[in-house]
Length: 160
Image 1 (cartoon, one colour):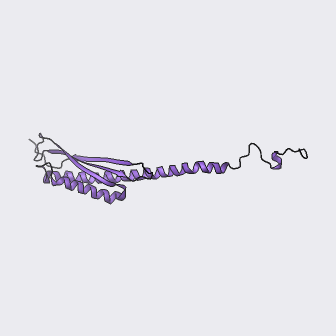
Image 2 (cartoon, rainbow, N blue to C red):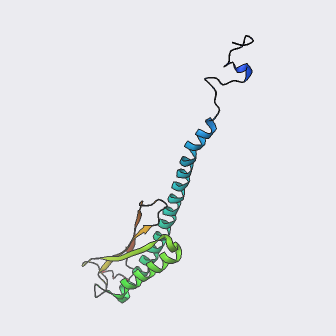
Image 3 (cartoon, helix red, strand yellow):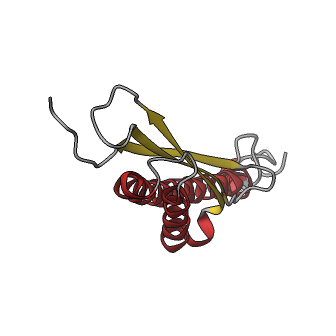
């Protein structure tokens, strides 16, 4: 004890047990990775939503082509050219809208036959499906998109 003041007294500027020097550095070390993780998750979510929107628009375009062309081009056979046209329309639209976000899209078509349908073509419904991967911000973290669209065939129906 010198001059009646203890060595750890705060009035003299010495260190104390409740000193908070260095806390800013610790908070920075802990919070910065969490902030970057939140930022990367936001970017990944935005990539996924944009790719899904582009794939949905592409499948709707393919389904529109299938609905328009199935009655005229491929009603008699199960492997009509309308299916190739629908796949080509969906893939080209996916590449135009999504670019590199819709990676290697797999597009398939399907249809439902209705023998009781009172029309020249017995196909009642057509369907276009797209399956694709989405680029990932995180290594080893893969997201996929599966979208479907379809509807009734556009054809005149005979009424009794």
